[in-house]
Image (tube, rainbow over all chains, first blue to last red; front, side, top):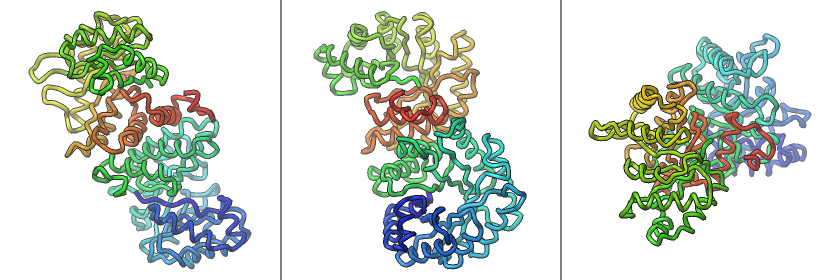
Length: 269
Length: 269
């Protein structure tokens, strides 16, 4: 399970404030804490408040790289912000571009740009792609799988290793009206996406989005994460500082035979 | 989700002692507590210590029926013990016979006996059947599904409503050597068993068996229960007094669109 720590994101008030104050200590503390908690990647998202998005992502990346070598996950829907981050990223530590839909509302092939940027950045830089196209986020299982298939096909055509693709089926907040069937549909879609390539493409998701606005955020995240791991999810953007969530990851991996059982399997993890 | 409270079982020391002392207060308290916690059925198992198994199950059934009308789940591998329990069971409250394999180590058709006893007891008495035959508990997915298919077929041939069948895929302790693939296999088997009849047969499992002998019993139970509910499990023999486990049931049902989301979905459950 490759965990991506979600906390360095301008939508969190402490990070937003740290960006405004150019206080890199706050960012560096979050980087170290999340790394210690088991993050294989640290998400880096400037949020919406910063006026200079390109400069801000570079400041974040450089601040983090001063204190740790954890792979960074550059998080923006804007190719120019990703490109700015890549200029200062130490790609030898690995990296992730987060994220690209298949294409944008226009017919512009946005995925091409992200795959090209990752290819250029080096062999350890992966790409998160959303099962989403110009029609938006699909509601049903079949369209999600069809878009995932197009993504895999496009990567293959470009000679981009499908093992560097992390497909994100996009989980919507359970609180959104008329989205009640989404969690079940996503699980079924994931079960099929696994068979699109051999070895299967990786799958990831921004888990916390599911529980947005609810009173039981950690519980909802924990239950759905267990279900998703049982369908092949092998990466997730999560709150790695949530100890109970990490225990669920360890237990799920043990039950799905990815980690051997021992009486101290939680500690081993 | 039809929950079967597991606590009235002679393998628990308090129940064993209560049976030895003929102290029905202990049993009645457990019956009331489990009913309040959401048990649709109360499992009744005399354990192995009682010399007179037939008399003991009758004493347990009668003691419970003095204080509540919850459906009882008569739990024994011995048809004569089940038959004794049925003699005093108030079948108008509903009931369950727990459990029969397809057949025994000899070719004796044990399932026939259980189906006949349930049919005779009345329309509200159901049967738990194990995906197990004279060769024991299967290790793989296909044999589990094949046995479940034979069970459904036998019920249909006898004119026993498949909606009264609760198929139990038998979860072994995760601590058992060489059983690491079992949880995943059981989930995959359940996904297929759902399609054996329309409407699908119910599925149940003795969840606590999974975590037998581990240090993290509740956590392991919670994680696997979430996974299993996402594959169609609609009943389980569980520790209903484990509040955290009940929260996982409520959350799983909400995520799988069996309960509508509201901010107080845990309380509603």
